[in-house]
Length: 136
Image (cartoon, rainbow, N blue to C red; front, side):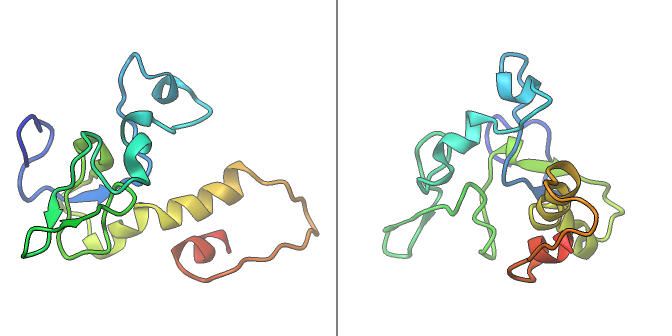
């Protein structure tokens, strides 16, 4: 846990959040009940850096390794903003809890919150990763 991080301790069980919420009283996105596209992390997600504009990763010879979409979870170790984490019960099974991150909640949420189809409709799902399986 880096400087300024107060809500987490080493060893906390967490799930990374692709689209986090800062929870600030002055953030119109976090206060909205229609979206959670908080700009605190989203503004830099596709640029390969942390919200402060820096990368925390380098190669052994000092070249920058860019962050992937604000989470960099396709790595053995990663660095995330504290608002990009959800602390979960330490008794939870991490192999099950990891499904709560992006894929399952995205697929389930798409079907439950944004349906434009009705009974007897035909739908197609491309891909059977976490999102596709959750849609089904």
